[in-house]
Image 1: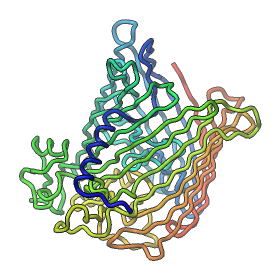
Image 2 (image 1 turned 180 degrees about the vertical axis):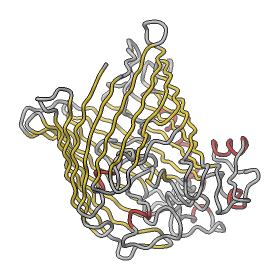
Image 3 (image 1 turned 90 degrees about the horizontal axis):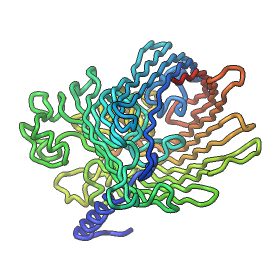
Length: 496
């Protein structure tokens, strides 16, 4: 074990911050010249059905689906989505406006109508300003085959907000495209009927950088995302049930500084609001046959990362992606390996009288004021492996009245995708987890859980612009009831 002195830790933090300013995240690509700004417009309608033998929809069918698949079954889901963009002014298309909407209806033991998306967008080159609900991926990780980013996965409904940011990477002037950045700044609102903290607000921002051009053989990435739950009402650790609000407290939220106004002892000795996020690093290697992506998300929530107390915690991944598809009847095109670890949390002690480098028990996704935790409509906003207490209550003890009773986990995950008979796309997800509860209420025996998914998708030749998808999934272990389930969906796509 390596022990760092305070001075060495500060030098490490400074070096990391400098690297973060010049390295970043790697989904979209952007060239430095001859750019055509093309925005997709289209619509789709889909009908789906899901079931599970235990009465629950299997984990990998309903997780990381933006909250659009119910947790319980059997259920039918009907969805419709539309988006439309058009250029403004000259034919260069630098300025564009767009709108998008999506509606989903659950027909089950709890009928619901959801609006997963509804937004208006103004774009200029690679910048956009939007207001409303919009599906987003935040953080450096594989968003298709992986478990989802630690702090902001795709597990919950999009939160309505106003956001200004980039679309993909934007080259830094005078660097000839060798240094690029991507980021956004936003503020939003949680659900009105939130059980513990009505009126709660969201502040969110991210900044990532990239060293290397889009087609370089080696690209380095790094950056951070920062989320805060603040304002609103709470009966816990507040003055007259009010969490700190106002402009000065908003500045404390933005910069994570102390000095709250009209605040309780809890806020004065901590930060204003519930802060969390990750610092992400990655490397992308281009070879002739495959593209290799290696990434690491460092977790921060209560300051332990600064002291390197919880350095063992984080999401680690490596992805191998073939550049050219083969011609055989069975192909593997992408292989992903991930390991998620959240057991450390800086150690089991949280006493304020302890020096910072000894203080831990970060209690991920729980908060002393925001007792309904890092959630939106009772779904975890971050990694779905930190489960709401309501999901595991069938067999395991509750942790007081906090959001999750299970935030100390270790997960090994394999994701793989390819083609079958040259016309069918297939995808598999296989996850094995050990679940340790929380420090104050550990699970006896550290229950193990295995969840798997196999998905097949094709376009039937007898109906144009139609996608048929079939899913088989299972949950085996001690965290959830034993479960076998399936899903089938058919979608019709329209373009204009």
